Length: 113
Image 1 (cartoon, rainbow, N blue to C red):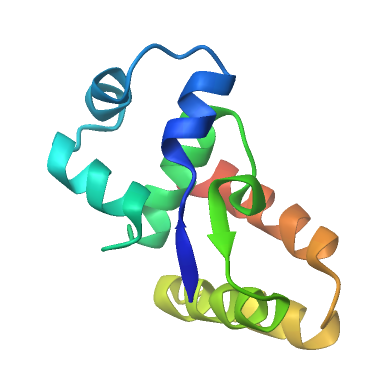
Image 2: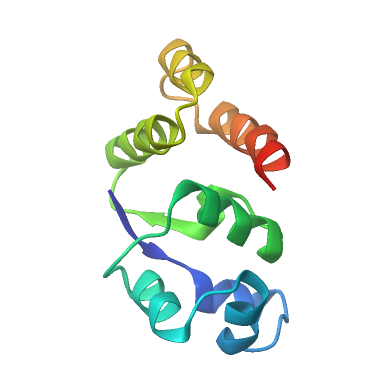
């Protein structure tokens, strides 16, 4: 599982204003966003991809993982949640290569948003 989302850091790094501004852009209340940022809750795949799109970052840049093994598990869980069987096959074929997962995440992002 992911540790938390790096929302606050990315908003600052990309000069996007405040966390409240990000909340308005993705239509989420501030408390929900704070919970995501602190790791008390996590957004759906669709919302995660929307955040990546708005922040101009990859999932790997947004999500802070505890270990590489958990990153693999999270990739699989995101795929299963979205019902993307292609994702699952891709991860199984390319285990251990997060750069290839990032490519597929970006392709998925363009289709969902």
